Amino acid sequence: MSEVPPPERVRVTGPARRRTPLTRTRDIDTETRLGGIYMGSLLREQLRLAVRILLLLALGVGALPLLFHLVPGLARRQVLGLPLAWLLLGVVVYPFLVLLGWVYVRRAERNEHDFAELLSEVER
Amino acid sequence: MTPTLGLDAAPGIVAVTLVTVATLVIGTWGLRFSRTTSDFFVASRTVRPRLNASAIGGEYLSAASFLGVAGLVLTFGADMLWYPVGWTAGYLVLLVLVAAPLRRSGAYTLPDFAEARLGSRGVRSACSLLVVAIGWLYLLPQFQGAGLTLRSAIGAPSWLGAVIVGLVVLANVTSGGMRSITFVQAFQYWLKLTALLLPASVLLVVWAGDGAARGTGGPATWSVPLADGGGQGLYVTYSLIIATFLGTMGLPHVVVRFYTNPDGRAARRTTLVVLGLLGVFYLLPPVYGALGRVYAPELARSGHSDALVLELPRLMVPGLAGELLTGLVTAGAFAAFLSTSSGLTIAVAGVLSQDVTGRSYAGRRLAGVTAFRVGAVLAVVVPCLVALATPDLGVARAVGLAFAVAASTFCPLLLLGIWWPRLTDAGAIAGLLAGGLGSGTAVAWTLLDGSSGGWSKVLLTQPAAWSVPLAVLVMIGVSLATQARVPAHTGRFMVRLHTPEALELDRG
Image (cartoon, rainbow over all chains, first blue to last red):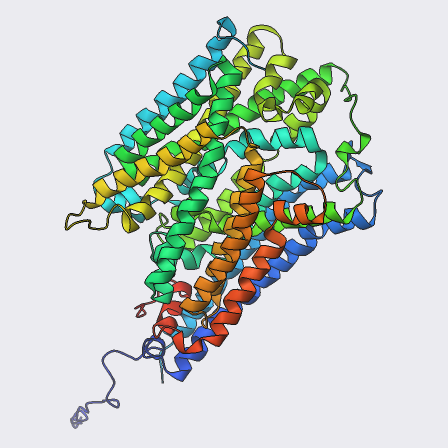
């Protein structure tokens, strides 16, 4: 058995890296155009969400006086032993408001989560 | 309506005493945690969402909610259901547009926010003036309601309730500030809910035992909203909706509580819990209004409808049980005055201490906490004196005016300040002036004259539907004309308002 000399050890090195990878938060901090686009997208998303929720509020609750005004018999129609107007304005409206608020909080937190992920991705 | 001081006054006296003592004890207990100026103003920003939501609920449910709504429903019928709906929906609007950014702005008070956003002392002064004006306008009916409650419950003279509430609030606020008030108000939400829920359940059982009696007398249109079918009714309802939906975010005592949340996310979650708490509470006042229609229709005719919640248990349940229930609602009503006036006093005192009592005069300057205490005395004494001097003004009506002023001034400022980078200080001042003068004229008209009838008077007594759009348009128009004045730090401030705190960003 002839001894095969072990292969010479080779030091493998990659191209030099920055110690702290630049994240996209830099773009916002230094107010570059790209940073402005990131911020604009967050603002737009959150505002769009808010407007959608407020539209639901306007349609679901804000339209009731107009409805009662245009269809006079509607408000006094009895539902579950109560006049419809009392049932809607005295009871049903409150769970509806909480539901809208719950949907909003979930979506708004998700928007912020997405934004944080976008920013924490490392620049290449 | 004015029983003499006698045996039947006992439950009322006990109730008022208990609430007052409990408030002072909890406030003193909270004092152990209050050390710094930051504790005084914002409880050092460490209040968790559920405790904070109870405190906000406790603070928000004022005399108008506890007494006013039931009285209004008794007198005016189904149209008045819009008041509690609007007061709750206002929190939804606040949640989606303002809650998290306002907390993230890192400011103590509304004037702080305005100054930080627009970099202008002028805007700051205008906001300070408005906070004090709205705060006093809102405190006035609280003191009047306190007088009414003591008169109705124990036959005491009207001024006594106002003086007691004023003194207790001062004792609490000046000793412990925001930190101790948080515990007091959280306690008072649950007290108020119990004080309406328990009697309401008993009264509903009594009513069912009567064979679900129907009300007699009065117009049959009572239970139908917009029964007169005219355009004026529609205008009044929509104006009310605009004032309450948009005014909530501009009330100084509501806004100041948002700074006590740890971060923007907590501010949102707190607001969601508040929506639930308010929804549960507001199921109850219309029950009193409807039962009052059956058992106490003479209250509406006599003009003492604000006392309905206090009188109804005694009218429907004879003997000791009725007296006990009366004691309970009296306790709840007193809790309502104490908590709302405490919150308002903190908000007004915070602004006064920063902009008036904390300034240096003739080279001398009061220290932080002392300036806050002096501010608190000013915040209570002025509306208390006005409440003693003015004749009865409908409790819910005065509160409605405060909402209209808030909706016409702070609502546009907050909305545009948070969502529109092109707002300028000149635009903000012009808009505040337009909205403030518009709604202020209406307030002065209502307080001085108050007669109704005809379109011009309808427009004056319910100004929000025209004064809010006016303020927004003026604010946008003047801002667009003065774009050179957009502050240089606007971009960075928007980053602070809208990005989650977990991100490491330069927030200016």
